[in-house]
Structures are given as C-alpha cells and as structure tokens.
Image (spheres, rainbow, N blue to C red):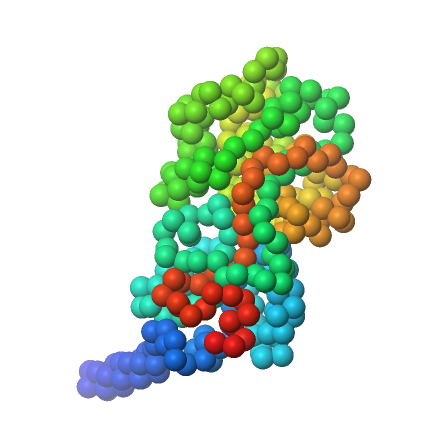
Length: 301
Ligand code: PBE
C-alpha cells in the first residue's frame, strides 16, 4: 500500500514537472528578432471590464487594424495586471498592458507608454469633480470645498504609494492632510463649519480614486460633515450622482476615458471642473522592449 502511494506521488510529481516546463517554454524572455504577437499570444493584459481604458483599448485594436491580426484584450483587474507585469519584468518577458498615470506602476517598474499616432487615447487627461444637481443649494459648504479641491499628480501619488505600501487609505489621507495644511486651507478658507451633516461620495476602487476620495472625505469630515464613501463599478457611480443617490464623485477621467458616461448622463449632474491635470492613459510596455515604441509597432514588430 505504502509503495503504491509512493508510486502515485512520484508520477504526480513527474506530471507536474512536465506541465511546468511546458508552460515556461511559452514564456521566454523578449526576443526583438521575433515577431511580438506570437510571443504574447496576441494578448494585451487589461483591467476591469468597465474601465474607460478598456473601451479605449478596444477602439485602438480596431483603429490600428490589430483585430484582424487576432490581437485581443484580456480583462482582469488592476491588481492582477500589475502582478502579471511584476512577474513578466522579473523574467524580462514581453508584455503589453493598459497603463495610466498617476499610478505607482510607473514608479515601481521600468515601463513606457507606446506612442499613439492615431490619437485614440488622447494626449493628456484631467480628472473632474462631478456633483449632483442641487448640491450648491443644499450643502453650500461642501459644494465650495468640492469646487476648490485641486491637487497635482505628485500629491496624489504620495497618498497612492502609502496605500500601496499597506497603509489604510483613511489613515493615508489623514497623514497627507496633516502634512499639507496650506494646500488644505486653500480649499476650506472661509468655509463655515457644519455639524454632522451627512454626505455621500461614490468612487471606483482604482488606486487614484481611493486616494482622492479618501482625501476629500477626510477634509469634509474635518469640516464637520459625516461623510460616507462607497466603492462601486463605474456606471453605477455615474448613475448614483445623476439620480442624486450620491452627492459627488471625484473620478471623472476626461475628455476620453470616462467620455461615454459623461455624454450618457449629460444634463443630470454638475461638472465642477478638474481636480487634477496631467493624467495620461494608453498602452505600455517594459523599457527592455526597445524596438516597440508605438501602438503601430504591435502590428509590424
Ligand atoms: N483608469 C484609472 C480608469 C480611470 C482611473 C484609467 C484605469 C479608467 O476608467 O480607465
């Protein structure tokens, strides 16, 4: 009996080793002399299906005539994508991802944006603050703060990096506020304190929005509000403000990335303008893929 078990264990092991080596044979380091497509199974590694960057990437696949070559976009999540990127970079394997800034992926990994000569993703983006209709009348203090809320990619990145290092988002927001009193004072100067008024901010749990939403909520809390923040998918987030189920969101990547939702809900919200400028969205690859510099190269290289 013992012998039989040992035999089974032995053959299972052999089987596993064969399987593993078969897998790794498809995952060689990037070879600039070979065509790129077959090296990565014509696959772009993406994030959650609802994200604007996924819709833009689909558009890029058709605009750059990559669909005909069987290029496809794989849906996953930001966490899964960055983990796949991490492993690919450790082995110098080829990979094409959906990339955006501000995000720690550009700080942590040697990656570069691919040029986008057909301008599918647009040049620069800004992130706008969107509030429900009637907020100005109902909560003028919160309205003023939300209207003034504006920071830089570098400031947002500080909070994002903390959260990525495992700090609780609410604590990271509090710490940032404590370290940047002058900046916060610009948003709250002359605004009356309130006493326990409830306010609801919705967001999508992307790293950038976890950072901005927590900072805004914390500033409102220090003003006397009782904020709740609620994470959801992108479409319900836009719907929540349009139907007045929520008061605000600070997550509108424009003009392109959230452009469809902006158009769909036009007239049902108030746009308070950018809270951040200099964002960017596109496709990205590791820098060691030296001969791949443009989305056009996916086809030809
Ligand atoms: N992003 C980050 C989002 C917005 C924030 C670029 C992944 C998107 O809708 O694609």
